[in-house]
Length: 166
Image 1 (cartoon, one colour):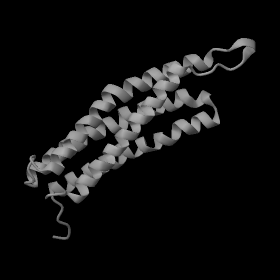
Image 2 (cartoon, rainbow, N blue to C red):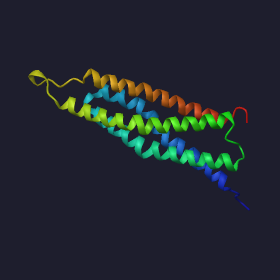
Image 3 (cartoon, one colour):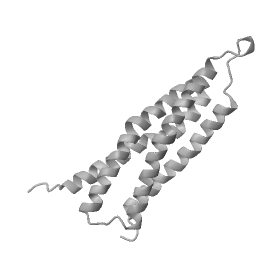
Image 4 (spheres, rainbow, N blue to C red):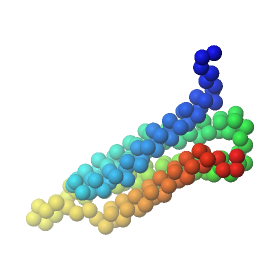
């Protein structure tokens, strides 16, 4: 047989591809927000819409694939769910899923609406509107939580690659 590719191998391929596609784009969002602010704040609604699309269309589906293929690999590879590196990674996947659906998606919807509304309002004498302190506070918090989520992705990759205690 020229190529011997098992279902397990295909599962690992899908698993790693889901991580790259699902989370790779989320790291670029760390550059999108400051770039939009520096170019012109009027781009901020687009950045929030982009973040929303990435989280709904890439990160969300990727998390499901990562979870399903991870369960399959744990069972088929006879790793055992009790291993710290496996249970830790599953915990990270669940935390990321909760953050994605429960925090990032609703927050980006709110921030997009706020930025659109606030930037469309003209100030006195026709001056461009300024973004409110509330918007800036929420956007900074989202950036901070995004950094934590990114760190968790890196920790999960480390655990999966090094398999400490395996």
